[in-house]
Amino acid sequence: GSGIYIVGTNNNLTGNNANLTGSGSGIYLYQTGGYRSNGNTYLGNNILTSILGKGIFIDSTFNNTLIGNTGTSNSSTGIYVYNADKNILTSNTGTSNSGSGIYISFGNNCTLTNNTGTSNSGSGLLSQGTNNQNIFINQIAIGYLVGSYGIRFGFDGYSSNNNKFIWARTFYTYNSGI
Image (tube, rainbow, N blue to C red; front, side, top):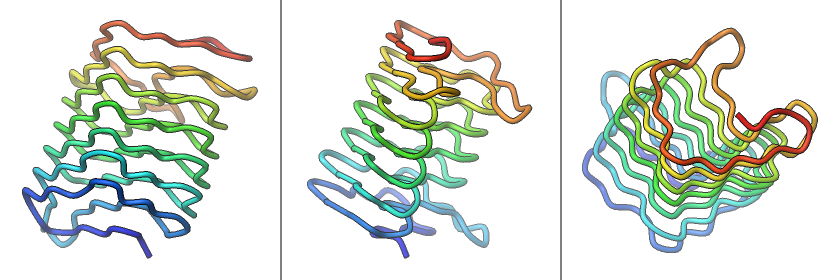
C-alpha cells in the first residue's frame, strides 16, 4: 500500500517532515467512484525514498498544491501528476529515480515553479498530453542516460501544446535539453 493514501477528501494540509520508504507510492492522492480529493496542500520536507512505485502520485484530482517535497531513488517517477488539472508544484525535487524526476501527464492549467529533476533514468521533467496552458517557471532539469532528456514535451505519440516557459535551465548528457 501507500505511505499516505488520500481518497475523496478535500482541503487538507499534510506534511512537515514525513519520511517514507518502501511503500507502493509514498503519497497517493486519488479519486474513486466520483469522490475527488481536491484542494489539498502537501508542505515541506516530505522525503519519499526507495519507494516501490512513485514518490508522489496525484491521480485524477484538481487544485492541489505540492511545496518542497522530494522523490528520490524510487522504482518509478519521483513526482507524477496524471489526469489532474489546476495543480501547483513549487520547489519540489525528483532525483535518481528509475523513471522521470517530475512527470505531468494529461494535466492542464498546472503551474510548476522552481522544481528540479536530475540524475533520473527518464527525463528530468516530462510533459505528455498536456495541451492547455501549463506554466513552467524556472525549472532545472538534467538528462542523465541515453534516451533521457532534460525537459521533454510529448511521449508515446501524445503531444504537449500551448504550454508556457518562463526561464528554464536544462542540461543534458546524451540527448537534447528541451
